Image 1: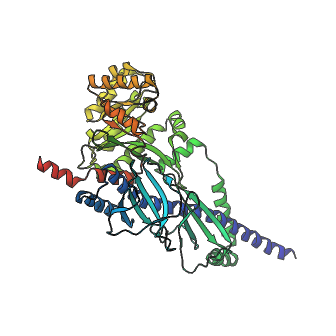
Image 2: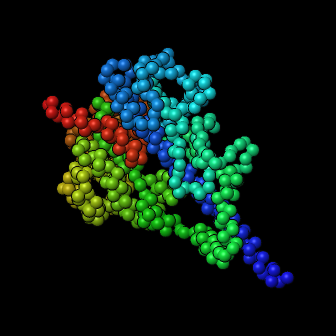
Image 3: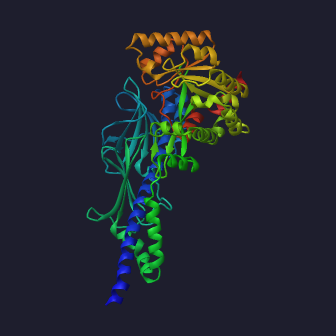
Amino acid sequence: MAAAVISVVPLIGLNALLWLHIKANEDRQVEDAAEAIMSQVHGRLDSAMTALISLGVKDVRSCSQENRDHISQAAARAPFSQEIAIVDPEGEVRCSSVGRSRVLREISPQHDTLHPKVTMDVVDHGGDNGPTHIRLAWNYADGSSIRVVIPGSELIPPIIVGKLQSGFLTQLMLADGTLIAGRLSSQDISISESTPRVFEASRGSERYPLAIKISIPSTALLRTYQELFIYGNAGGAVMALFAVLLAWGVSRRIEGPEREIAEGIRKGQFIAYYQPVIDISNGNLLGCEALVRWRKADGTIISPAGFIALAEKSGQIYDITRSVMKRGREDLERVYEGRPELKLSFNLIAGHFASFDVINDVSTVFADSRIRMNQLVFEVTEREELPNIARARVVIARLQELGAQVALDDVGTGHGGLSYLLKLGVDQMKIDKMFVDAIGTDRYSTAIIDSLVRLASEMSMDLVAEGVETQEQVEYLRAKGVRAAQGYIFAPPLPAKAYAALAEAMCPLKQRGQASDAA
């Protein structure tokens, strides 16, 4: 009896541990698969959004031959789209990238996107119960629009290699629950409303009103793991038990937040998003500002508010800044080569100007880069007090000797005021979002903007307005002579691929070369 208990109890325990291992592993794999699929959906939608924005900023409304060419070029940059079309205020298609356009039926409300002029909804072809499509629309004030139509089935990749061992169902839907498309990872899977789902995971998009839902039917899970139970019970009980306990112990280990940041730096998890800077006098792209994000192992994107304060306090901000500069070089040097007019800005803290380490970092990262030194801008914020003005002035001069420019960020909100402008010798001033937000509502803030414009002109400095979000702000700044601006009215901070595509669309090498030849 005792022998039976001794032999059976470990097997029961082993099977229980195997199930716990499967549950922990499958949960993680489902989350990873949802993140991987959402990443591909983002990539395909980003190409369509970039193509749409490139047409919208060119004010493509008529069907002239030039605009038809623009539509054809945009369609080539958005390979997963089915159609790009100009639509009049009555909803009739004026011209389309595919010739004659089919009538679309709206099957969901319109949803806002991060771009204030672009909406998203779900449509199909006139009630034929066929496949559904996503429609992105750039909307003009007169009621006309430019639309990009993408089949829902084109957004879900056919297979995610290595993300899930068992078969699964993927569903793409709007944030309001409207189903766009679904795909089975294998035709061997049987799915019905009554099929039990063992594991499920949902992943919302931070850029679009979309969500991904992954679910694994119980039958698919059983088929995948039946051999694991057989071999585990037959000969691997001891090793399986040891491995599960070890994995469980590792997964339960809790690290401090500083150690977590250090691990994130070591694993290259600190990446850059790029917010475009636009010439509001002519609509051209001037460059971008690199903004750090923390992409954790599970794909979660953490904004700077979640880690910057601790990183600065612990001194890890310097390693993060180096990581962001290296990432900026890797992400953009192919695009920036041959486009010397584009600038790339990085944020520094007051501590960077207390030693010459930042000079060595910039020299090391960009010494043999295809991004030229004169394309770099380094921003020092006025919100933090510089510990040593004289040393800071020398560091700024050394950066300028390399060919880079230095900008004073958050002008008028912090410690330095006019003394920083007079003593530091910076090349640019950046108008803080606080003053831009007050345009049209606060006469004192607009008076400050007027003063900064005059001061920049008198000191021969470039001036950039941050946080521009309305057309009223754009018109006011343009009327005051401000040339450069950034903000959500133009674009949010973009992932590297999306910004690179935007730069290539707005600054085509071929057209610029032709213009130079003509001159």
